Image (tube, rainbow, N blue to C red; front, side, top):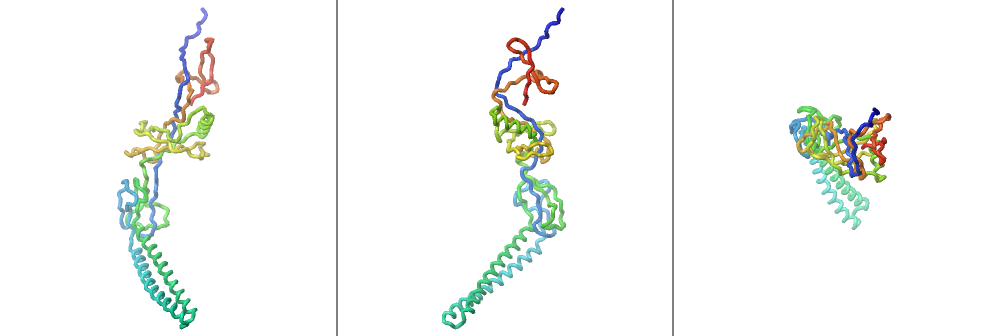
Amino acid sequence: AEPQPPEVGVMAVRTETVDLQAELPGRTSAYETSDVRPQVNGLILRRLFEEGDNVRAGQALYKIDPAPYEAQVASARAALAQARSQIAASEAQARRYGELVKINAISKQEAENAEAAAAQARATVQAQEAALRSAQIDLARTTVRAPISGRIGRSTYTTGALVSASQAEPLTTIQHLDPIYVDIQQSSADVLRLRQEILAGKLAGNGAAATVNLKLEDGSTYPAEGRLKFTDVTVDPSTGSQVIRAVFPNKQGLLLPGMYVRASFVEGTKADGLLVPQRAVQRDEKGQPVVLVVGKDGKVSQREARSH
């Protein structure tokens, strides 16, 4: 007997609105990071925080020996007092000479010299006031304070260590972790294709406010949704990818900087999309996805399928 044509299942498809979902790798990074460095030279007398604690902006972290800077403040204050005592005498002499020159009791040159001396005394007072403010600023800097709020790391210097304002190594690092950034890597070719389809009207973009979901390193789903912030304008020449940055709430502290995650979000919406089951999609000799379509005459033909 002649072999009968094989029976196959047929499914009718229709156009519908389809969200194009993307799942991409990414890594977490701190919302803000600040290296704490000394701004004056001296010995560390005390460390005023516990490593790993949350600190607030302005909180005292280290105490550097203030004795040399207290002496500088006292010296600057004394120099200012001396300059102020001189200004009174020079201004009084300038006034007297101003009266005497009117009756020709002294020369005009002597009166001008007295006025110049008074002006110089006033300038000396201003310079000494600036020197006092500078000494007071250095004294205040002997208390090293937190520049931002966040979680503080380990201290690289201990009590008794000598530190300097020009050192390269920070005393410690503070990271703001709530909210936290997730930097997602996407191929620049995919980003270009998506933008071209949006410009051509084939897709509707979701904008920078699209929601993002995360899968953590252990495969679990992060309980809070994030928001896309922006797409970097630079392509990494070594990887050919662009960074898409999302921001997530992190009140429980589950996300730490440097964690590997997978982010999923809707890239765009196609108004006339066609959805077919995954098992109906095959690959041709070039590796392109194809489907078998039944025409009006009941015959089957092969069509290329474009997936997103």
